[in-house]
Amino acid sequence: MQGNEFYIFLLLASVYGLFILLKDKKNPPTETFTCARCNKQEKYSPRTINAWRRGYDRLYCYTCHSQWLKDHPFRQTAADTRGGCLSVFIIVVLVPPTIYSVAKLFF
Ligand SMILES: [Zn+2]
Image (cartoon, rainbow, N blue to C red; front, side, top):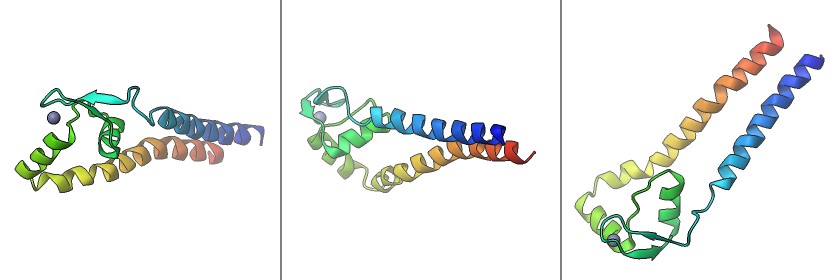
């Protein structure tokens, strides 16, 4: 039984570690960013913070983003589904170690 408790602890520790890792990435290091299109300095908005969290290093100011949406009306829906893709990615990363840990308990 001692071994089972160790794997459960390991699982909880890895989930906790991932939580801390995600929490650390919560906010950008600076208050402003430089627009990748017009080089204007602009404060982060919820939209650009989300983009930053998703790993985009090319951020656009509100004006350039609005213009881009006008030029690419169909891509907006694709951008909206990226949040779902990120969730799926996290599940795909988390599930195999969990299955492995559970399998270790029984075999
Ligand atoms: Zn711009």
